[in-house]
Image (cartoon, rainbow, N blue to C red):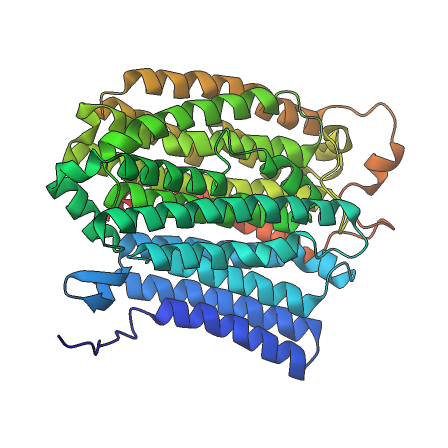
Length: 499
């Protein structure tokens, strides 16, 4: 057998660009030692990665690192969509980080380098064709975030959040690796498509207790990554303790990576009759607990964190249709997978806009504060508060936030097509619960303030009343425009998600 493999460098171009960005950031910081140059290199690298991924994904699907029909790298439309979104999210988070970096809250070189490394993991993740590549990419996405969460100088909250995140992630990684090892012990394969084919062709393998244990452990490990209930407790504390831009990255790119990994193993490797009931239960618990606990939150970032937990439940909901025979037909499964990916894309754009809104309305380098700190913000900064309010309305699934509305309609339609009307009803009921806290925050932005107070004096500016850095306003504007565009043309995302 020929062990020499041809390598398709065009297929690997997005990974080259992302990894090259990290290397160039490190070299620029070492040789030039100018923060602006370092940030510029990181921003241009993220933009170049997005453009390169889009160009490669525009053509036919490309495969490399193949042994026979089994390939470890498969770059098609969905992988390109994930790579472009991750790169653009990285660019947006870098823009949100500029005020804190200028204030010296974190070292610029290390910060930009770690962000670029995490972007590399996200780009590779979408194209992973085997469990080893998948897990390594997921950890490459996650490992830099341990440091980024605790990188803020002199902050005990950041250090505590970093330790919490690290301990939970180690447990999640251990479980994921154990599940992959057990699957290999049962099937002798690691490529996702081969695993799916073996388990489909040999029903006796699915009936083995070891297979059931492998599926359960692997799903639990990945459920930690997406903060699905009951594996969610780390998320609110970590988000609230992290710097605002890092919390934004955790809630968008990191969550998207976990969902892409979960979707890859569910769609291509694991038997639907075993994963469907588990995913349905996780979806119901996640959206219900996330929404109910969010109702009681007074801190802005904690509310967004619990909202993010609930949104993960909506994303998992279409996969719950696999629990029923009607949801396991080829057409219903394709619709469910496309709905999950599309909802994830709509969500991360709106979530980035929401975090950009909080960043724009808070002092440079400050945390998210409480909901009372945002009270009356629209009277002082109408455009920033308006964009923030649009993001919240979109997350709630109300017009004019059409991206969020179409996202929920897509999920409900996929569930109805899969015969899971009961789960569609749960999604609808939870969407109504979510309205309460999203609209409460939106209303607070326009509510009158009784006394000016220190919070009102500082909101939207620096510690000395200096106006917010323009790049944050640019990120907020671009994220808002992107949400509007996706809401007007949602079929573009659905078509890419279905490829």
